[in-house]
Amino acid sequence: MDDFSGFDLVGQAELVGAGEASAEELLQAAITRAEKVNPRLNAIIRPLHDEARTEARAATKDSVFAGAPFLVKDLYCHMAGVPTTGASALTKDFVPDHDSELMKRYRRAGLSTFGKTNLCEFGTLGTTEPKLFGPTRNPWDETRSSGGSSGGAGAAVAAGIVPAAHGGDGAGSIRIPASCCGVFGLKPSRGRITMGPDLGDSTGGIVNEHVLSMTVRDSAALLDATRGSMPGDPYTAPAPEQSYLSVLKAKPRKLRIAYSTGSLLGTFVDPECVQATLEAARLCESLGHEVIEAAPQIDGETYRTYYKRFWAMTATRAITALARGRGVKPDSLVSDVEPFNQYLFGVGSEIAAADYLIDLNWFHGIGRDIANFLGGFDLWLTPTLGSPPPALGHFDAGTHGGEEVMERFLQFLSFTTFANMAGLPSMSVPLYWTPGGLPVGTQFTGRFNDEGTLFQLAGQLEEALPWSGRRPPIHAAA
Image 1: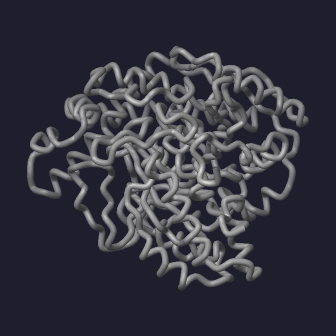
Image 2: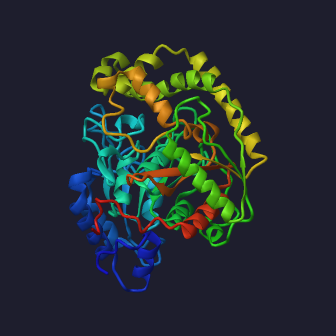
Image 3: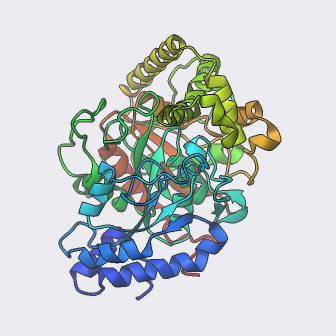
């Protein structure tokens, strides 16, 4: 039992509470697992073993996670005295002098963070292949992408290094690697978890932070431990009436679920992703839910046009903010970033502030359209992605050009961005594998402030079609 790879975070904390393991033993087992598989995967790019040992020794049995080992993505969630690089040469030497509020909450919950995980530069792509650290490889197929931007977290969880790891989601960056790596990933409602004190709004309120996990209950327990705003936050989500863990213990009522398999953006959807969705729809129906083919009405062509402009502002904002802090012009920094972010900056720097605000207001209208659509349904079921995990290099703008990679981005992420723009909770559930053995996630999007229904259905699906026993070829317990 000294491997502990069969236990989720909640289960590991229960072992400590029962005196069957110590936090130090849990941590050492996780470090051993990482040392076994990380050289092949490159999921963890900064080990923090000594720091984690200090946390594990200080953890108490009555804390939520009792010193269980954890990993944090190298973006946004700052750790005092530890570099936050954003996988960019521009920020590789940035060392914050404080913890982000979310990091404080992870510490208070008793987690021992023993490393930081890989991502794409600035988190702007659906893959994890930064030039600064090199690519994270998919445990199911080393030639494939692990997804992004939280690809390091997805690979670490899928390979059994940890049962759950922190991620962030601005266009699907929790759900994308969850789908690519065959794990569970939930993006909460806008404002559910604070991004303070360093960020209030990250490009129109689209970014949310949470975790990728092997079990649904870990996701629920971690959201219980970290939810809530802090004074001055521009967005807040109402507190749930009861804990997510307690909600998870109850079976969902009969749900009315809309499903659709076609891309509202008019992009190609791989038949395996369609098949995954249809099988999920049949599974939901067999569990007693009402499943109806339906989708919100969205002007897909206008969405594509506006979104390409909107997404360009992510890199443009990052580069401009860095330039302002250094007292230089943004153009002077562009040559130091990767080709796709150079492309985004080129687009974004031509956009007037008034046009950005007009576009943002248009997306708010789309958010209302989707919310009104969900007034008639509890959940909206779709593929998570437009294709199974692509080959490494598929999103290389240096090879294919920025405009082509943006088109590939929209095809791959043709289902995930809506929840970000509308601020809705959304999850990728690992229910399907292709005949070739690649995971393909299924996405469920819910109403604002209704993570509880998502968790309940996810728990029911997990019981009906368990996925935690499916291990990729690269796994720490192999």
